[in-house]
Image 1 (cartoon, rainbow, N blue to C red):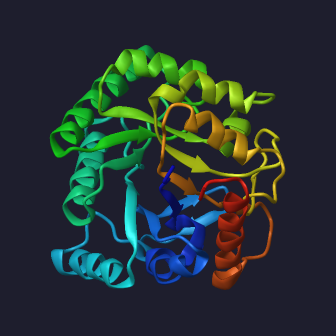
Image 2: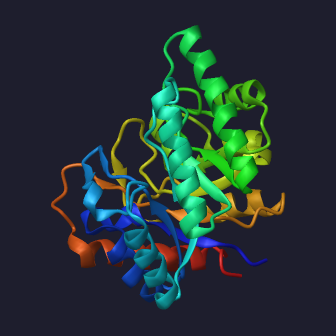
Length: 280
């Protein structure tokens, strides 16, 4: 079985998308999930200028696309999250990012979020707005994979409820192995995946120590809580071939690993996935 094995550009921290593109083939794979926005959560800080956002002019976007092609790097998907899906403004931002991702990188999957509605009215707005961006995605031949984040996609119960409510063929799930354990104390990761696997369109492979609210996301294989071979076997059973995206968000309180330290973590993660049969 040929699987798409990718790496989220955020693994390269503040060095950003250019550093990721320049180094990923040295790590043993040739695909990236591109961040289209900065990041500032849990100690992982990536300035917006380190990524190519939907605000980029045509020359900037084209130059980066051409750089990827020259380096022999594929784009497995784009991470378009950040828009507040409770609002018209956040919905419009998500739509712009989806269109940008398709135009410049030709992706067929984007990773986004479902926000955190706190009232029934906000919940209805999120559901309706997910349908709206789902319509846009479907017209473009794209599927939206919703992140495993606190709120409507926090665990299998919440995910299944949201999938039922939205009921849109272009709105599916991004299953994050580390986030399930981060947001759900005592969760059975494999049972959670088994319940939602038919809706999974993208996977973030993230390791941890298995403790809730513990910002400990090292190289794959270093956390010890996740059996990545078992994850692969579960998804092999339904014919899922990816994207499987490496995501390394670091360890709370650690010194900045630096670009080469971050790259070493990616390389070791690829090696661990190889030992778990992802390249067989």
